[in-house]
Image (spheres, rainbow over the protein chains, first blue to last red):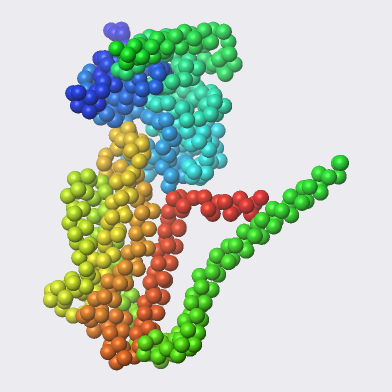
Length: 272
Length: 285
């Protein structure tokens, strides 16, 4: 039986309202699906409910309506198969970089059970991840001894260390300068090409979304809805040079128009 | 001019060296200063007593106190030992129960709101008023002193640990929650380490007030301890010995504080970043 493979992530008619029945509607009937191994970026103006969407998919918040299914499992609480990196590095300041990266292994089964017996192997794995993002030699440092970009790289390693089937990135490069950000795009692409996780990236940077993703979704302003969807045709691995080509720029402009339309929609709504 | 560059390099090196030397001097002064100030205070005290011919019965000079210490060193030592042990037992109990209750209150909003008024009410009760009750329950001796030391040093520990845990950044909690961590995991991996700087800060306060508690109880009802010795001395109008008791107590307080501070420095260095590193970088140029 060659059944069509079910999408890995299915978000179906999900809505989120804050503060009870009369509260603000942050997300309305969001519907999207992500195939296994796919890299999807969600872009939109600030306050469009992108982060809300992330919180719902990761199970940190319960949704008001609709359903989220990841790997065939209804998300009603955080799932251990999800790795998440936040806008801030959120490293624990009392732990060294290596200990920070290994934190998920102390929490998530089956690693938690095995950690004591196979500590050396796990440590080796964490070191390998750190080396992949150029942090070899910084394992013993504390977070405050590292720059913001380095902390964010360590946070990325932490999100990946327990082999999550789904990687959720909530504006992970938002607080970094453009040079560091571009560096990290390339590194993230390398990591993704090696480990091949399913990724959902939330960002307001169109260039970032197009550079990294297989598919870009544009969200409208509050209440957030998925307005447009665009497949990124460029082959991988992509280089930073590609971002200056006309084809790349055309795509940026096209998505930009969608966003502008979304923002204007918001203004007329306010005026009405 | 081409030969300017090396000269400028030399001048730079000299300036860096001068900066490092200044930093070293400052650090040496910092280490010496407390001793100098204590010495100065005693000197001023001695001079004032002599200059105004103050009676030893009103205010004994440091020299008189020292003489009294030399004369009564054995009972002073024995009673100081008793007080130290009493205080440490009470303090130890306060750490155990304070930590447990602090974690409970800090991690549960319900407990926090439920228990706080009672705790504050309890802490507002003067402990002098409690000692007679303790004596009725446990009789005169070591037990009331231990309990008083415990009662008085318990509160700062609870409040600090609870604050440390209750103020964990939601982002840090989310990191663990997103991994499906249980509440116990979150307290162990984030809450407790996060509360440690608060905990050690409270220990420095708690150890000093623990001495207040045990000596208070000893002055009211005990047959041993520095507090009892001071009461005995004052009933004999031996004021220099009373002051000798005070000195010994102050010394024990400072010593225990130093121990608490040293442990704090070793275990929660991450929370006190900055100062040490600046000095290193200045010395390294």
